[in-house]
Length: 73
Image 1: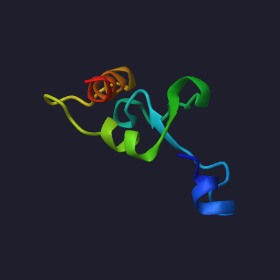
Image 2: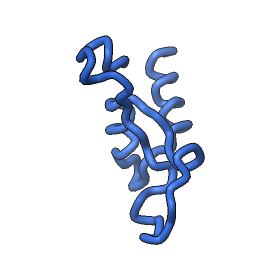
Image 3: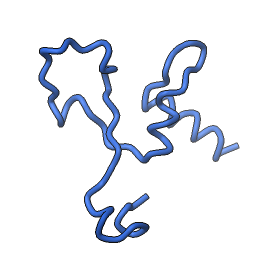
Image 4: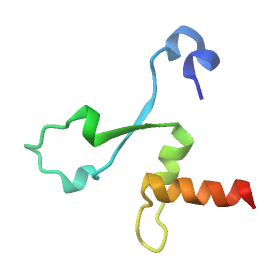
């Protein structure tokens, strides 16, 4: 989703980001490397990345697999 296309100027340059290592696992002193530690994702995917499957949150790769199975089947 392109936020600018939907919301106009207020949405320009906006995107959700997902912490590849959960924040609760990173110490307070840790300085986030924005290129290595974060992944841009759409809001819907971001929400699904925080849903648990068998007690664990899926990785981005696992979520892609789930989506591919849904759309290929």
